Amino acid sequence: MAAFLGYVGFIAHAFGVFDKDYTRKEIVDSYTEHYSAIQTAIGYYDSIVPAGKQVEVEFEDGAIDRIVVQEGPAQHPTYSLAWASSSKHQLDSLVTSLGWSEAAIQQLQEKLEAADCISIQNGEPAVLGFKRSGMGMYSFNVFSRPIADSLREQYARGCTHIVQSEELVLEYGGGAIGPQCFPANY
Image 1 (cartoon, rainbow, N blue to C red):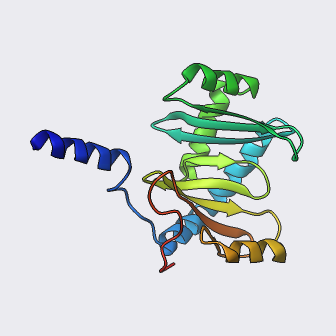
Image 2: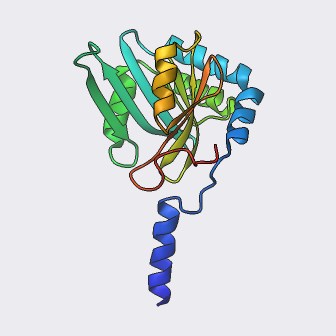
């Protein structure tokens, strides 16, 4: 019985059953408190991502944990994905293809830590991963211009985004298991 309970505890921990859920206020407060650092991280990231590529990178325990590279035309993009836990060689290969040095990666990580974030993706909007909860991720979608009405309406039809202001949309992306939407009390 003790072995079974230990196994259940391990699975619950692995899937984030005991991870913190964040309130809308906590997410917005962090954005407000770290606004300048978030803008700095976005600017730096835009300067190191090669033209024509959209790159998402996530850090965990002081190193890149996941990287996704999209390139090519919008209608037919190609994707490359690597997780450090499954393919260190592939992850290193993607980082090398971007021309990133260890110093650039270290600087990016420091800027994300100053912004109280764990991931970033370039584009419009820039998407900064705030925190994980289980397999899900709370994120900031930061727009450089006011959000178009059509996009605002699209966000309102779903349950994964909350329009906070003209330049900020909060996002909750569920993982493979667990909640897929913001809780109802948001």
